[in-house]
Amino acid sequence: MESPQAMKSGLNLPAGMSGTSLRLDTISKSSSSTCSDRFIPCRSSSRLHTFGLIEKPSPAKEGGNEAYSRLLKSELFGSDFASPSSSSSPMTSPSKNMLRFKTDHSGPSSPFSPSVLGHRTDFSSDSPTPPKPPRKVPKTPHKDDFYLNLVDWSSQNVLAVALGTCVYLWSASNSKVTKLCDLGPHDGVCSVQWTREGSFISIGTNLGQVQIWDGSRCKKVRTMGGHQTRTGVLAWNSRILASGSRDRNILQHDMRVSSDFIGKLVGHKSEVCGLKWSCDDRELASGGNDNQLLVWNQHSQQPALRLTEHTAAVKAIAWSPHQSGLLASGGGTADRCIRFWNTTNGHQLNFVDTGSQVCSLAWSKNVNEIVSTHGYSQNQIMVWKYPSLAKVATLTGHSMRVLYLAMSPDGQTIVTGAGDETLRFWNIFPSMKTSAPVKDTALWSLGRTQIR
Image (tube, rainbow, N blue to C red):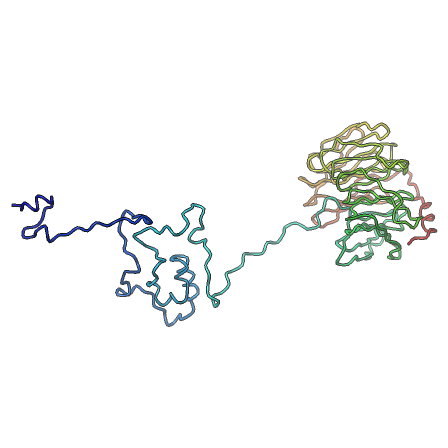
């Protein structure tokens, strides 16, 4: 029968045990810690060495896997286990344990805190350096600049190609390659343009200079300044060289005078990337990264026409050799259109959406057709009839956007350059029925002047 004391305590005790022999101690909760739902003994108070659970170094691998073991312990148990002092007795650490009964609130509790495997661990000086991530190698050429003009074909059948700091000349008649110049490690070539008679070549540099070279003797005859930054486009007429720059200005250079430039045309709000003189030398068309197409005449410092229908940079410009005052222009990626203008009244005559970025334009002098080269996203070459704008051909082969275009002196062949670092020659136009000889009036005039 239960004793009155057992009944009072509400405990079912075995016979012979009194309630006074059983004592219950209450555990007070600390305000700084919370208890988990089950009891797991603390490692620091355990006697794991009694059961042989402490890792003993293998004689055969002494020191061989020591760094790896420290790294593994650090990732699993914390930084204290990675230190050399703890490797001899890893179970005596007073604080950092994997299993505890009480939850430690000293560390960050945010869900954005570093994970166990993501925290930074300090290793001893004898530990090997962690392996570096693989080096990233660009898959595209670094000279894939939409705003440069690095290829031109002279009337004497010599192709000029700029590569980095150098300009090379390739003679189409004998396939001879000549290195014209090297600007050195502190400059680079941004544009090349032959004079119309083909004896001299102008070079625009990354430092904003314009250099004039004698192509036959590979000798520099003059250097002109004036631009504050790179000169990305050049255009010759019979006497005047126009240069466009990232400084938004167009400078006019006259080889017959000693000054660097004789005029400055200010109208663009961003880099000038397209320049072409009309066939009669009366008008200069300029395109810019501000999406504007401007037309200048020789009698004013202000643009005669400001055409703003393009919605992207205007680099591609071509004047028709068949009709006076007919100008074609092409827009960049956000525009993709070739637009045709009557510069006499500023009216847009027609346009065609090509479906991709227009990089350059050239009008055939043999037939009334125009060729365009393209970038994003199809990198194609297209030939169009004018004025019907019927597509004659679509040529593919370049793996990157076709940025550069030049035409042979006979008007039958074009050469295209792309970001894939290849030049390709295309025979796309028929021959001229009656070939006209190249006029050398500008050659004799230029040859007699003092060129500095």
